[in-house]
Length: 515
Ligand code: XMP
Image (cartoon, rainbow, N blue to C red; front, top):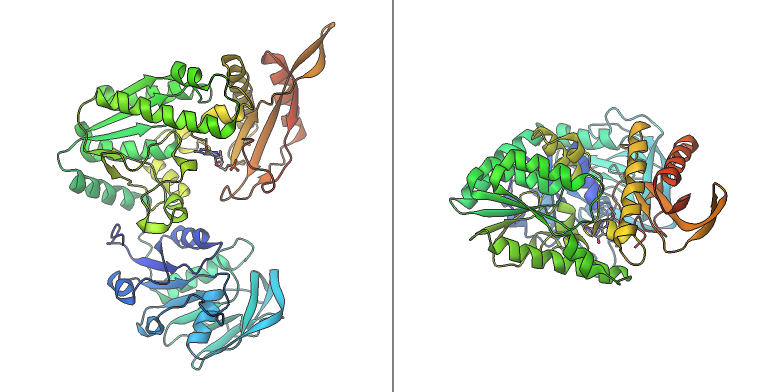
């Protein structure tokens, strides 16, 4: 159990297997209230010990009447702690407290109008017939004794309910999903109206507390932190610098697969900030050599990961003894790899990072934060915009945007084309409107014409996506004039390219990267 941020009011979100679990936590934190996920099996004594100001029961795929369906200690409802049940959590609350839950013939899915019967505290300020997002088979047909029915829909006679005396609330719809117009208001009513939240979860507090915690844990020992150029590791390094100063050494391993100008800007920034406590290692020749002749994407990832670790070990050994190594692990990595118990980082994420089981103790000061929170902290720490706003970039870098073999020439093509694409996106005000923009170099070549002669050269593929969670993505509807400018510049300025394509595939079925 994590005791980090114990001084903040906290809401615990019990996860019954909801596909929206991370969204629930993020939406609570966006209202300046700290929230963490717990499993349904968490003993009640532990939950009480954490002194949450509120508890949210998430949705989930099960049916409350199914044998083995996840459940909760009924005593939870007698603690005097406000509880909000969402979807499955709503049904569970109803069924545990003596209401009725039934399978409905039709699944209620998608945008659904909410008819308000009694706004009460939970639906205060919510407009009648507002649109909510539903996704359920079962429904509550009778609220438990003591509950008032607050709203219904065509298929859900009890779409929202409340027992204000006991501070128990349930909603069949998903307030955490953007399609629910009143979602923010409903969560706000629960958090501030029922739980008495004060809004004490802010980036500045995080910084102060984390620095203190790092100092306490590290004492007078030494810490090594690898920098990748991304926002996460930059924030970790900056927090550690403020916490233990001279005891910190940062290492930047340049694998030669970053975008144009990135290695230079990270070296400039951190050598200015850390002086000789910053070590830059140019290992690009080694990486390129090891990648020679390798076309398979998974093999490329493996080679890059292994070369990274070997380089790190060799270089770290030159720097003396360290007790700790710092990682930029984020909350989604922790959740996806099995919650608090998990120390491992998914292989997908540790390329360009390090395994968590080296001979050092691990420091993971961001392990309870989401990416948007890390960006806020970065801003608060005064990191430059180019780092704060840097889009996600894969650990194996441009190597997985070059289909087939990575050669210096092909690397040059992708790097130059990518720089033009990003420059034009920024100039047109589109850089922050897309979640990720990239350029892919395929293996095929095609015929073109230039001047009087025919060419036989590569196409490049532009890809720009909009996504909340990187799990699903829409292709960005970039203006045709912008695409025309990018295309024109690339074929004129990047040697070896005679065609530019725009990828209009969603994820799924396509992925964001091509490899
Ligand atoms: P896909 O291509 O799976 O990408 O839709 C989802 C997100 O993950 C990033 N990505 C990676 N990140 N190592 C990483 O650190 C990798 O091997 C890797 N592969 C994909 C991708 O850029 C996107 O943000």
